[in-house]
Image (cartoon, rainbow, N blue to C red; front, top):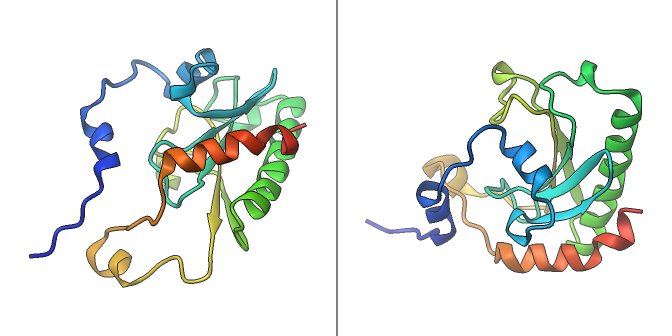
Length: 162
């Protein structure tokens, strides 16, 4: 049997779980580097996905807690849309991603992992970034150090989120 090691996943099963809404917790602790917030303003913030689908996976999250986009003010919705646009530009330029998936899963039935607080996903994509192991073994192998990616994006974030 072959073994695939993913030591960064150990944190997922071993660290203390946050009580309540994880996104509200990050919003309240956005200056803590462990939260991996790339940028924030008065309406929303941009954060690395702690358990990403691809290297550089970021999220745009409003500070306002709601599971319904229709409950967001037009100002918050517009600001989130601006941050999505800026995030795509950053991922294309800094991560050299030729493509980006943008998504929002509203409700458990739509696949939301954290359904109580709306958020956008931005996933950088590269040609050939999926392979047989994802399909056959339901496993992904990432050729990247996630902390190094966070530091790289954090260093450049102020240029993009203005």
